[in-house]
Length: 324
Image (tube, helix red, strand yellow):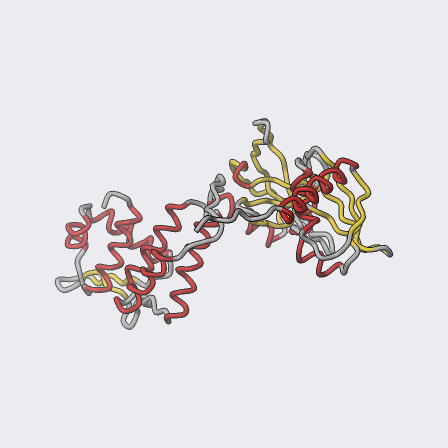
């Protein structure tokens, strides 16, 4: 029980279960001295917990009459929602650290009644995901929370940032929004150093400092749309343009918006994308139920022909006849 916060929480538990303990008695149980007990009592009062001190022979510390810390009372559905949320955050890489999520889950399960704890443990041990766990670098919780607060308040912040090439810079940013995408946290905002919109990986932000300036997010700005469009324009080998002759809404549901941009036109929906390999793009286009026209590159047409040849050969292949 060496950490001061642990002692403060233990003091609160002692006060809830034992009214009128003296400073000396509390010091003995906490393994500290009376002066430190007074400091811990002051911490609890700063948190709004009414700790009273009575002098005299029968005096001591006690919580105000009628005050009790509320118990954790969850219905079955609420407890399931919390545990599933923690498990999903851990699997998707959404948490700040795996240990933080596991610790929170353990604390919640520990205070639940046995009748509810056992089914939830069974759910945790038998739950499977179709996708593997994401192994991304988790951002610091302090950095993440500071950016979220600044974004809500419309306050400029200064950040220490490390780029993909390991270059370190200090810059002021207007945080328009925090976005979680495929296992990573991103900050979207106006970068005063570049005087332009920029996207930053939050796990590369070492620290956040408040600034005195305020800002307003441009009307209609969508951080998610900006992030996905930025990632879709990443450095890839091939620039692909294809018109898909189908309805925009249904096509958008079928294609990953992080990899393509879609524009409705008179002849259909123009899909623009970048790809490192054209065989994967050929497979994606072949999976659609609508006809399409390839504008470029010519190598994509050849990739589609190669795929069609492999499919035709597979359709013509006869199964081997097994001898009885």
